[in-house]
Image (cartoon, rainbow, N blue to C red):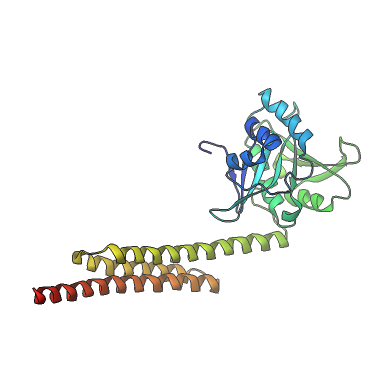
Length: 291
């Protein structure tokens, strides 16, 4: 997705749709996954983004009347560096009106609701669209029974403003000046964000430790130059020292353990390489004696 506009949040990546993506979503979801570089769940799409809605959006895209990002966006959960999951859609309903008003909506797959993902996505999209100075306020419509959606909107800064344009809905309005750049999260959402980021830190430590071990093993097999002996020792000490320094900055005990393991692996690596050279030296002397 070179040169593709994207928005990043602590756990998500938001990608604006285009005609090619919508065509794939309607006809062949596997190809959509390839375009987004993400897994498409079996129960896709989320509520409100069925085939008819997508066809209406596609008509707008094909008419080329809208700037990139002024319609719908795909919400992707970055579960790890190698696992990306499409979990919802969000976006606007076109460019601002003459009064500077834009409407936003969103939908998250049921399995991923109540984790703060919608909050991250909506807040990020509003921050992005407000870079357009023609946008004076954001509106949203929701039904009276959608309590979670109402709480989300209020948390971001929206206020209820009477009946919505669609029958049976409530109108919520967010003036430009009421938008707060800091991400507001519920207690539950904040807990989930911290837990996800902590888990990612553990995975990073584990991956780095595995990488170092694999590197040491590979080098052990190919090193045959005694002149590299001291450099190998220095490398082991340097990585060990760095791992110790990083460990001291972490408060989480599990992550501390992981980085300590990295430091230990570095020391073992240096010793193993040194032993290889010692063995090579002994073998060389034995060969000379036999000759």
